Length: 359
Ligand code: CUA
Image 1 (cartoon, rainbow, N blue to C red):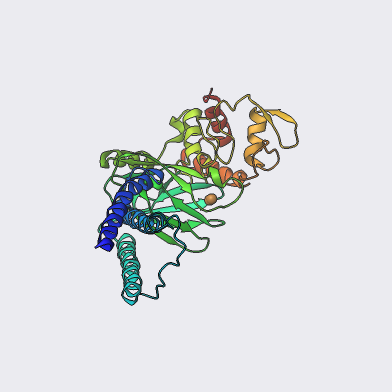
Image 2 (cartoon, rainbow, N blue to C red):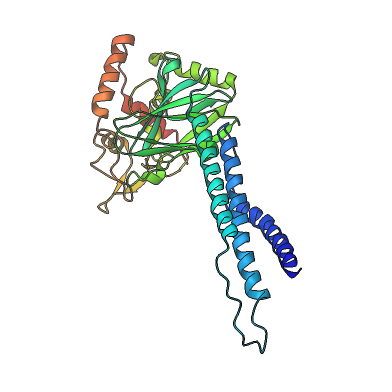
C-alpha cells in the first residue's frame, strides 16, 4: 500500500530532522554554567522545551515539504486533484494531543516553581538592597554586618529578602537561573542553594535608569570555612587607632561596619566602569567634566566630590551619588572620638587609600 510507504518515509524524516535540530537549539541557546540546586530542574525544563520545539518544527516542515515535493504536478497532468473533506479522527487527535502536551508543560512548570519558592530546611537569611545603581547585602544572622559583595557558603540554602530604595530592580545571577524583582515599599524573596564554588556576578535585570547596565555586584560562593573567616573578619570590632589611614580608607571603601552605602557599589578598584569612575589611578588624574572643563583629582577635588557629589560630574557619567556623606561621616567620626578618643578624618583616610591605587 503506497500510503504506508509515505507514512514510513515521513516518520523517518521527522526523526532525522528532530535530532540535529535539538542539538542546534542547544548550541544557539547554550546556557551558562549551572551553579545552584535550582538550576537542575530549570535546565531539565529547557531540555523538555527544546525537544518539543525541535519535534514540532520537524513535524510541520517535513509534512509540508514532503507533500509539496512528492505530490507535485506531473508533466502533462492537467486533471484536478482529489477533493478531500475533513478527517474527523485526525482533527480530534491534533486537538487532544497538543492540549495534553500544553497542560503537561503547565503542570510541570507549576510543580517546579512551587518547589523552588518553598522554604528549605535551615536556610540562612540575607537581606539584599538595591538602589540606583548599586547592591548591598546584609547578614542579619551574623550580627547584621553589610557587604558590597554577596558571599555565600556552598551547599547552604539561602533566602534573600530583597527591597529597593528607589525604583524597580531585579536580582539575577545567570548561573543560579532564578531571578526576582526588587520592589520599592515591598519585600520580595528569592531562594538559592549555590552548589559550585566560584565567582559570579549579580546583574540588575530591570531597566532602572542611566547606569542600569553598570549595576553589578560580585558574588563569591565559598567553602564553609572561608565563609566563617569572612564573617569573622567583618564582625570583629575594628580598633581605628591601631589602623593606618590607608587601611581605614579601604575599610570605608567597602562599607566596613558603617551603615552607609559603600563606595564599592559604584567605584571599582580595577578600572571597570561602574556607575561612577573607577578609583584605579584616580589620584592626580586629569578628569574631563560635563561642561568640558578639566580638573585634576587632588585632595580638594576628592573631598568636594564626596561632600557635594553633584557639583562636578565627570563627563559621560550621570549624577548618581547621594549627598549624605557630610552628615554620615561626621556622625561616624564623632562616634570614634567618643569610643577611642582619637580624631580621624574619613575623607583623609579615603584619599590615603586612593593614593595607593596606582595604575
Ligand atoms: Cu537596577 Cu537596572
